[in-house]
Image (cartoon, rainbow, N blue to C red):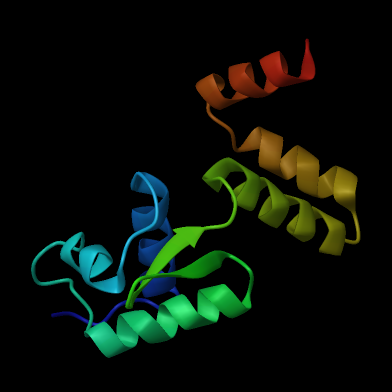
Length: 117
């Protein structure tokens, strides 16, 4: 197995949880990783615990097993991240212009529709 980029396992865990259809055990989540990319169970549990402490993942007991689920939809999560980045900027206008200038025509059309233009 090749070494992951920093934060990649965290992103993969969140993506697999968002792509799923509800709460899952760590073992079920582990089975969703492609062969050759599966982390050790203890590593996965550490990531899930960290995501839980950040409020991104909820853990519930179902019998003897813990099940994990995301606490908010994917779109809401990324919109919040985008807002945080924008809020940290010293020049919001410049950041928005750079961002909009890098969007594809399709993404611009989606954004225009969202803004009611």
